[in-house]
Structures are given as structure tokens and as C-alpha cells.
Amino acid sequence: MKQAIDPPLMQPATHAERCAWSRYAAKGTLLQPIPGYYAEPDVWNSLTPYEQTLAKTYAYARSHPKWPLRGMSAALVLGAVPEYPEYYKYCQITHFSYNRLSSKSVRKTMLVDFRHNPHPLPDELVTQRLGWYGKKADYPIFLLPEKLAFRFKVINEDYCLVSGLLITCISQIVIDIFREVPFEIALPVCEFLARFYRHSVEDIREYLHATNPYWRTESVDYKLSLMDLNSPSHAESFARARLLAAGFQAPQLQTQHENLLYSPERSRIRTLYNEKSMYTDFEWTNVFPNTPQPHLVMEVDGLIKYTDEDMLKSIHVQNSAEVALRDHDRDEALHLVGCRVVHVQFIEALVNDGASMIRKMKLAGVPEIPEEEKIERQKLLRTQ
Image (spheres, rainbow, N blue to C red):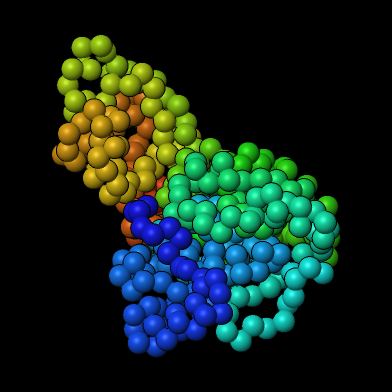
């Protein structure tokens, strides 16, 4: 994420300053992206739509420190929402939970919404913790999740703080996202949060049934059963969610295979894959029994794999052509251990509801669940 004035939205400290900035905004010298907050035009216009959304969320939350962020807004400030419009469009409205410390009344000038949280935070605990961690208003906001983790503090089993902002706990964030966001968007974000903050599926399920008895839980329960914390990236989780929604059987993730071609002599050639083990993105075992290649493997490819300099250096290649040759050699090694490999570009999963990917995998022979189960799955995967 690029460096800029961080945070980019400024709030006037005095009445005189507020009047002056309002005049500057009327003249166009300053911008007022949301009521009460201002930004320099060059700085604001240099930000991506994702960064502008993040900045607005921080500003709303800092204006109302006792309103806990929830759902996709909480995931956004935790760094769990990728920079794709398909994801952050669900953060355009800032989502808060309400209780006796906050209000659910409609705000005419703020793009916010509220949902009830049954566990209010005690006044003294809020004041104490916000006093410890929440006073500082100039926390940087354009940080990677690894850096944000150092600004994450647990208040109690229902609430946390990140960079001085009050949010609901990780389990409640996952539950809210599964309820409100389409499954293919929710699954990558929820798997990232659970994996990064070390919450097991059983932990979240236990919290769901203990704290949300007034809600229908069948749908969230089912979505939790489809989570797999072995998924290493948003792209793979997104593609898997599309496959599951289309009625395919759930694949095994990161299946390990021995590389029969491994040899110390091969390490001198950059275009050869010479690791001792291979891990497949998705694998369905024994799809084609009694054949030389009984297992079906799907690999999800994105442009970053071929263009990111750090990724190229990590595998000791110099350009995208060498990456392509190395992947071809890996496919040959997988073929030798009984795997048929199908490559899917992430863009195939992303556009047109994944129609290109789904058609490709049907032609490849990925096993599907029975028709009755498909209908039940589609019903349970709907948002509530």
C-alpha cells in the first residue's frame, strides 16, 4: 500500500479552524469527503477508491469512539478485505453494532448502518480501554495486516480494539459477514480472519450458539462447515467458494506430493521446479480410478505470480517467461505422481459469476454433489 499523508482526512481542532476550513472547502482549496473531515485535493485524489473507503471508515469510527465497528467495516480496518471493487463495495456504508452505549437512530449525513449486539460493553471498561489505546488520533491506517496485529487488543470476549478503534470480536465479525455478504466474498475474508487471529471453526461455532440464540443459525453453521483454514490466499478461497456454490464437491487443499524429478543437479537451472515436495491448490482424489492419473488437480493462477518482483526473487527467477517454464516443469512432475492438472486464472473465477471456471472444471470431470444437495446448499448459502 503506497505511502501518503496518513491518515489523509483531517478534523479541525477549534471552532475558528472549522469555519476557516469550511470556507476553503467552498473555494475548492480543501475537499470535504465526509461531513466534518477535510483533505488536501492532491492527497485525496491520489488515493485509490479502496484507500478512500478505508479513510472514511476510520474517520466515522474516530468521530464516535463508543460505536463498535462490525462486519465488513471491522474486517476492513483489520486489513482482511482485498483491494478489489468486488470486495470493498460492501464497505461503502460503515457498519456499526449498537447497544446501550450507542444509538441506532438514522444518520442523515453519514453513510452508516447499525445492527444490534446483545452484549453491551460496561461504561467503565470502555472508558478505561479507550483511554489506554484510543486517545491517539494519528495512528497510521495504511498498514499491512502483520503491522496491524501489533495494534490489536482484546477487551473482553465480545469486543476488541485495533489502532484505537472499537470493534466486535473476531468471531462476531465472521458471523456478521457470513450473514450479510455473498458467500464468495465472505469466505476469503472470514478464512483470513480466522487463520490470522487463530480462531478455529469450532471456536466461532461455539460463540455463534452461545451468543446468537435469537437468530436462525443454520445458514451460518453451514457456511462455517465449508471453511478450510489451510487456504493460503484470498484468490484460492474465492475460487473455492465459487466452486462450492456451483455444486462441486469440496476439494482437498495443499495436498503434498513427492517430486520424483528432484535432483541436486537440477537446481542449477532456474526454469526447472526442483523442490522436494509439491503442494497442490485444490485436489480431488481418485476421480479417474484405474488410470495412470487418477487424481484431478486445479491450480489458481494470478498475474501477481508472474509480475511481482519479490515473488520472482523468492523462487530465484528473473522474469515471467521463466516462471511459466518452471510451472510447466512442475505440472510434469505432478503428472508423474498421478495428477491431471487444470489451470484456472483468477479472472475466470472473478468475472461472470465464475462461468468460465465452472465450465472448465465440469469438462475436466470434477465430481458434483447430488441434485437435492445442490438445492439445499444454494438455499443455505444465501445471505440473511
